Length: 127
Picture 1 (tube, rainbow, N blue to C red):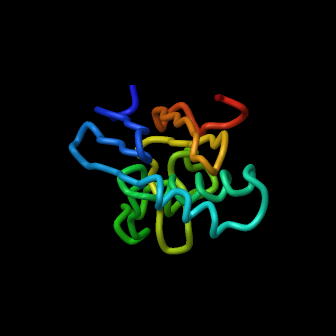
Picture 2: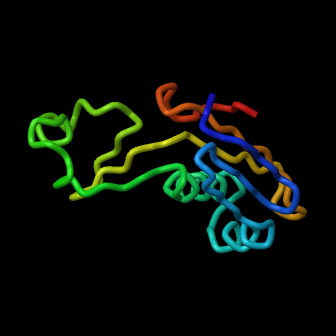
């Protein structure tokens, strides 16, 4: 099970994690984000999901310097698991994969999927 206690999509996206952290993106905020992204709804969805996945509490970011010199981050960064992402001098560690599929931007209609980091990224037409 993903580390989620509650998901609510009434009036936006509300997720309460098992550790008590809360993520909230209201419908107004979601629509504003989508409006600011050029392209069709599929492109807007991809961009929104990239942004969403990078948000805490779904990903934590650590400096590479915090890892032991013998850790894969330092010795073989090309063989890291998919939930550990190198970005320059930082490493993003996925806590939980998340994706939103937008059926419509106005009125806002969407569904959300969460899954454990070990399963890997959410791909394909899962909705």
